[in-house]
Amino acid sequence: MTLDKDQDLKALFHDPQIPDVDLTGEVMRKLYAERNKKERFFVKYKVSMLVVAGMLLTVSSGFAAVKYGVLKNEQGQAVYEVKPLKSAPPQTKYSEEDTQRIGMSQDLAEELLPDGSAAIFYIVPNNPNKQTDTRFKPFVFNDLSALRAKMAGKPITILDRLQENYKFENAKVFFQPVDKVNPPTPDEKAATAEKLRKQAEESGKDYAMMPIELSDDLLHLRTVYKQGDQEVAVTVIKSNNGPFTAYIDEKIDFDQEKITVKGVEMLYTEYKDKDGKGGRKNITWNNGISGSEYTYQIDESANMSKEDLVKIAEAYLN
Picture 1: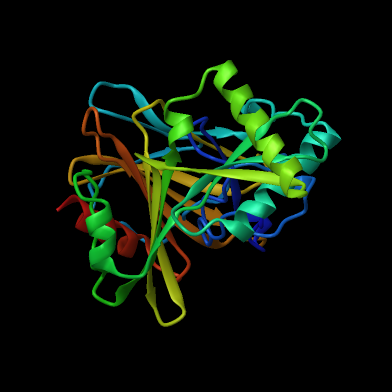
Picture 2: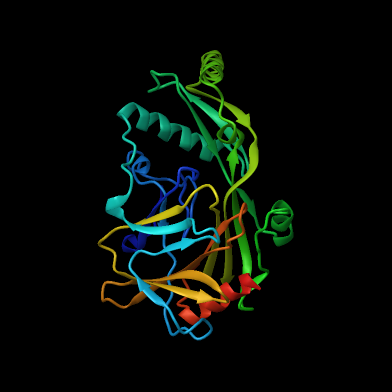
């Protein structure tokens, strides 16, 4: 996975529902981009955390400074939490053969799959256990009306622009492949692998693929707004399947506050640069609607103030 240049601003997200994708770009930039083939499998769910600076003018005067914050829904259940990296679950250890096989399936997916599609891949080399790999790409939208049509029926707010000056640029929408929503039985999976293995053998290729559908089960949506070369990204992640956790390396210097905006609890985070000064900023909250909970995160790379980010968050609450 391609990592942003600002390595000291990285946080590690863990959620079994999220695929092996780069979830941000200044926050969630490229999906399945070129990467070191060995490194890509051990560095999962890397995300630039969003950050904010400045005096808070439009939120309640009370706030609580926290090192590792947590957001809860109306039932008191954690839906978003921040933890130190040392508490993250151990990463899956892959054999050299698995690493090579997985890397090849990802590269093929990047090359062969159109946006908004999925497929099951069978890789011939480095596959002694005859495994398959499901790969997919997000839908990409450059038209706001088309994006809204795709998201119709989901309780997600999509704004035309942010603070008047930041106009909609593009969006990526990630949905679960159908075989992840309704997993096949071991026998069905083995039958698919054998079918694809024979296809590869007959075609003389070192792989075979079988297209499958994407479900309507949303993983996450990333919308980008721009003013000139300045960018703000708004990421919405489905979070009613358990808490979404951000693991932050203990070496990263950051300040985090729990604030209240129009009665909604939010986490405001400001990362420090090498001189200890304010860097990138983010603000995160949960919509709190039971049964359809989504976590929103605003990531700025435009030197916005804390007040600016709070005003954007308020617009999503209106």
